[in-house]
Image (cartoon, rainbow, N blue to C red; front, side, top):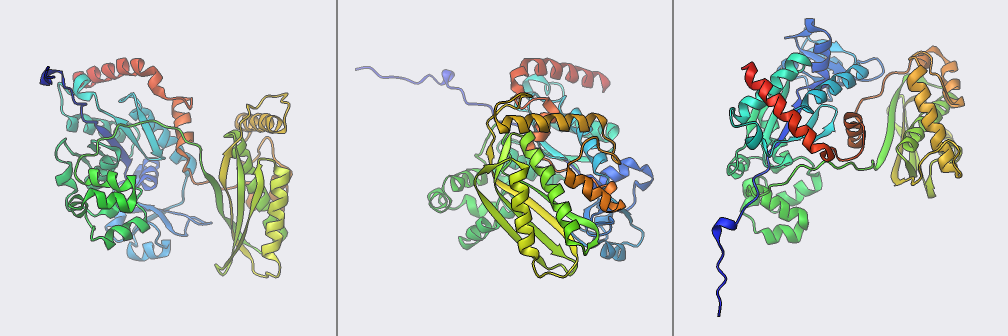
Length: 462
């Protein structure tokens, strides 16, 4: 009889993942200060709405000390902070500054995963082998934050932990500044924190956890994992591991198709002419469908909502028998929805919302002489998009649809359409950063060489 003996020298355990989360502080307001340094040190907020004086969409820390918060009416913000500065949004500039921030971050890790215009994750798992021999994580990350502040002119906060979820919680706790949650300290950090702080947790799950008596992560950690699995499935098990400091996930760069696309626009003035409002709705529909086709997607469902000048709303939706990408079919449905919901209405139109969801892949590669309608439409959209990028000016697009041209001829207000809010799906951000939708780890060797070079330069600068 033989006995198998386990040699402890051969047993290896994977190193703890080290994920860095970086987040721009009050990003839109910080961008306005970067664009106008005279605003530095003053309370600043950015206003939305048709004239930039609707609701507060961002406020810097100085303004927040006076009680100015996101979602507050701008007149209320002015009442609370009379010396504050209201800035109208400059979305194109926000995009540019965001690109500059990510350009800096991309130099510090082979894996960078942006999740919005002002925040993203970096994989620092092997940093102790490559960079942190002669410095500490805190010094290194603070150096990155200082570089962004110096070169991009915006403040950022950061958190370092064993998973992306925990790193984001660390950033929220650190603002403004940086916090590292070291391996083995996860449970203690989470102990008294509310489960509501966890990114992505919905209200229904919050209520379900509260019904079980789980208000903090410490409460979750003390519960039987089997109970959480029975109640929430796999997510419940993950939550229990997370609360006990045992969740250690790698950072993966995945590019997912969007599931919805929408446009929510407040008109320059309350529009009493319903045909003009329909023209605008068709113009927005054309723009959104073109974006879907460029992303090789098509829609199964669409909806239209109209808000009137008294803030009442009407709306309708359609579900196609088959996913659609053609303007002729989609615009015909949009007209029917519009005329149906506006029948008998007399109030002026304030806001129009168009949305497509339940999206499906359009599995064709657009070619100039394609054999299918999908290929021809895709080629047409690609060509039109490229021409507009090269030859358009804000006041004069190179190419317009009939609805878009008619809209501009209605009045001068539509000749200079305001920029849309710059939030983009993750797949678009990644594609712009990397120039491809492929996983950049295919070039990991090149990044590691570059990373070592950046590390040496940083050491010589100290």
